[in-house]
Amino acid sequence: MNEQRRQILQMLVEGKITADEAERLINALERDQPESPPGATSRPKPRPKYLRVLVTSEDDFDGPGRINVRVPLQLLRAGVRLTSLIPPQALTQANAELRRSGVPIDLTQLKPQHIEELIEHLDDITIDVDQPDAKVQVFCE
Image (tube, rainbow, N blue to C red):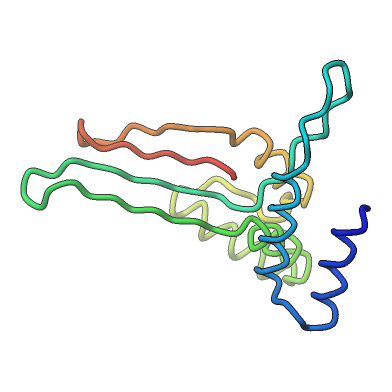
């Protein structure tokens, strides 16, 4: 870990800056780092922080519409870990309700590594909807 990053984290620990400010500073540090020379090994792809859902449509009545939802992936990761705290009887009932609603998910089989695999494969998905002028995009950033 470089010294600048360590200083930012120390300021966060001391309460001098907020977590959002620390994140912005660290991101700025990463942007300011020079490009690696040709032939050097590249750094691994940064871990995505958000699931973004964009919905755009051209509505004849109200004009263009746009919905932009940004969900922290940490919330999804925490939710997966919380399933281990749910009693087995409650999971069985929840699975039954999900199946009855047409959602074929077994919560007893949901593991943290599954959410990471999903995030890795969720690169840039475009979903068509019933309206010909509407578009839904789901991606991680």
